[in-house]
Structures are given as C-alpha cells and as structure tokens.
Image (cartoon, rainbow over all chains, first blue to last red; front, side, top):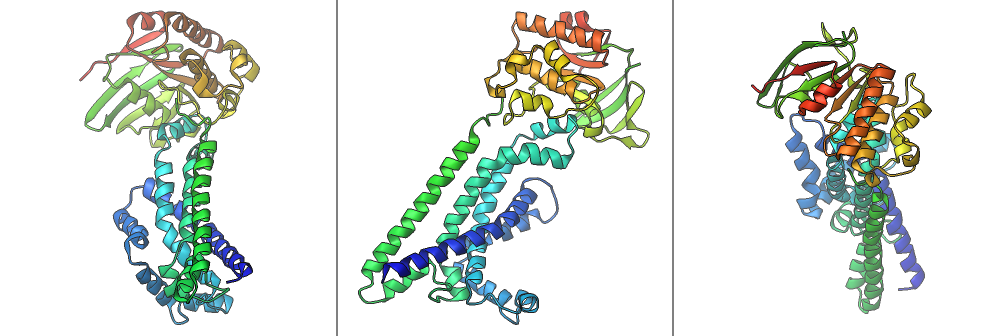
Length: 229
Length: 201
C-alpha cells in the first residue's frame, strides 16, 4: 500500500474522531451532570442506557444505529427531510458510531470530575452573591477541567479505535468510512498485506499512546494550583 | 435588634431548635459541639432550609412569612470554619469574587493587612493568613451582616489575638451585626455583646 494512501486513512480517522468527540462532548457533559447532581426517578435506568454501548457487542450497537438511521428509520427520515441525505455509508455515519461508542467512557470521566468538586465551594460562592449558574461556571467548571480534558482525550482515543459498530453501520468504504482499524482489517484480508498491517498498526499505537500521554499532561497542567485547602 | 431568629430544623436524625432576639453588635452562639451551632449559621445563610419559623436580620426578613430568600440575595458574609477559599484563584481574585456594596476595597485590604498576600495561591497561605483572606472576602461581598464559624480554631495564641482584635474593629468601626459561633468561654465573654447559649438535646 502506498504511503500517501496511509496518510489519507490517518487524516480520515482524525477527522472522524474529532467530529465524533466535538458532537459527543456536550451530550456527555449534560448526561454526566444529570447523573452526578440532581435526583430524579429513572436515574438508574438512564445510567444503564448510557453505559449500554460499553457492554453490548459493538455489532449490536451498529445494527441499532442502522435501524435508527436507515432511510425508513425514525432518525433517518428526519435527516432525509432536513438535509436531503443519509449518513449511511458516509464518514458522518462513522463519526456517529465512534461518538456513541465513546460516550460511556466520556460520561464516566466527566461525572467523576464533577463529583470530585467540593460542593461546599459552590455554597461559598452562593453566599458571596453568585447565582447557581455563575457558581457553576466560575467554580465547578474550572475545578473539574482536568477531568473534562482527560475524559475528552480518552474519548477521542476510543473513537479512533472504533471498529465493530462502524463496519456494521456504515460498512468499509475506502476514502469514506475506512478508518484505521477498518484499514488494518482490510489489509489483513489481502495476500502480502503484512507490511501495510505493520505500518498501520504502528500508527495506531503511536496515536493512542500520544492521546493517553496528552491526557495526562493536560490533567497535570490544569491541576496546578487546584489543591483544596 | 440585629438577629431575630426562631427556627426548628433537622439535619438527618438531629432536631435543632433555637430562638433568640439580640441587640446590635456581636452575638455569640455558645455551646458544646453537636448543639447545632453551625446548622443555625447555615440556615441564616440560606444553605439549609428550616422546617418552620423565621429569620430576621436588622429588621429584614430572610425566611418566614412566606419568604425564603436565595443565599445570593441574603447579603451575608459567611466566614466558614474551613474557610473555603477558591483554590483555583489567587487571593486577589478570591477577594474580588463577590465585589459589591459600599466598603472600600483598599480600606479592607489595609484593615486586614492583605497587601502582601494578593498574588499568593490559597494553598500557600498559613491558617491565620487564610482566615484573614476569608474575612476580607466576606466583607467585600457587600455583606450587611457577618456569620463567623469558629474563626479562631486551629490558630496559635498570637494569631488568634490578632484576629480577635480585627473582629473587634469590624464590630466597633464597621458596625456590622455579627453572629459568631464558638465553644470557648473566654473568647465568647471577650467578644460578645450578647451570648446565646445552646444546650445539647
């Protein structure tokens, strides 16, 4: 396989991963807040649903996405009506699959970081005249930032590695949905594909390791000056 | 009158009742630990809702008669026992967090000798320094009254003396009503205009 094609695969993977995380982050943050803070009926059920992609066979998640986003499916009809197009067999669909699979990991990290912020500091902010919203933005958010960043990068690494749901949902189309893991799978099927596998696997390991190290550095940098008295 | 309080509240299994109506100055809530002193301060600050009763400070109703003001509108300067300085902000930003009201910032910085601390992070402060910052932050938030929870605890004698002198100045020069929690008899007798004794039930 030519090296140029490999960089295309890497670029596509990064694009899919970045879009997946950009869309998933606000959703994950909202869910993490719901699970960390208010009490409401059905919380256990919501917690379970959020974690489903973590334990379901990815092929089942991919199949469910297919049912939802197919032209006749409930969301598929909406995308057809709104954008006149479908996400099936498109890189946008790959991003959706990667985002859904990364969601539970991100929610877990974000929830933990929100729960770790001392509620008593928010109370102090309230007595100083801050509305609940201002207390959240000026105290809770900055103090949970290390966890938010670490969770985001972790989710990105997870999105880069997505395979099962993606191949089920949007198939394995070169230049459109063939991300790194799918390219490695394809190369494995080819005679004499070992060199390509080796190179793609090396890139994959480097990207994952880089993401993990970045997550650690970000968390430490943001963590400076954050020790509660 | 400064603090007119008559409330019942519960914290978990514990039931706390208190009723007092005190003259202007510094009111000491005195009693053994577990008597509910801190819970009463929290109720006055609006962080805990009483089951019934009323809370009025300097003639203004904060709770009762169908009123339950949110903490941010009660204008209380709460100096917590654990101080609760914001760890991600320097002293300067901590002091400026709630800026409102008529007190001059420079006056407060001078009164509490905070000038050399302004660029420091809270975690680098000693207990006495952090206490002074917490008092300054509360004063600068436009507070119309102060709530102080054991402000001398864990300070050595010299620091405690320093903070007590400051509190006397706030009481006499700024003339803010102060509700002050302690379990130390000499401290109570020295500072109080009025002592309210709480018993453990």
